[in-house]
Amino acid sequence: MEFNRDEALEAVRRDTQWLRKVTARMRAERDKLHTMTEESMAEAVRKRRSGESGRAWQRLQQRIDMGTTSLEDVMMGMDHSRDAMEVRDDLTENLGKFAIECNELRRQGLFDFDEDLDEGLDEDPDEDPDDNATP
Image (cartoon, rainbow, N blue to C red; front, side, top):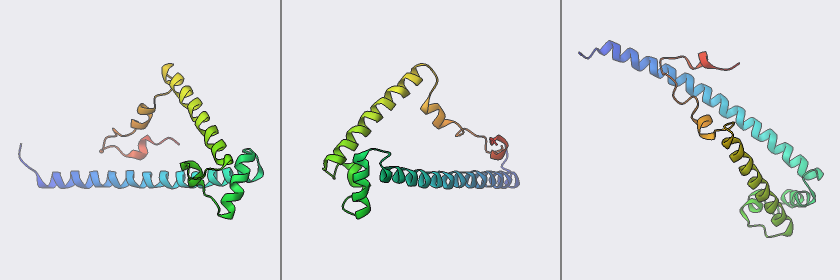
């Protein structure tokens, strides 16, 4: 088979156009996720301040607001207060329950993290990514 420069250039242009569309879609998803994260963090802070997340979180949030601790210090174990230890213990327990639930869903065939993660990575570069978009 003989090399055809024009066909090769057209293939590169087509692939570049596809990559630009995919990149734009990924940026839009990233921005949407960032906005959702900011909104959910603001809601979490509101709940901690109001006491909806428990008294330990309420006291910790007051300390976070005053600058005497940080969320990172609480999560990373640098804050050794009783409230921080209680919150970490609760989080550990809840994450354990979540892992058990995910394993049960996986066992039942209702959840496959790896499959969900890989979904969409095998798209054809000749296909317009917007053709497969879900409204």
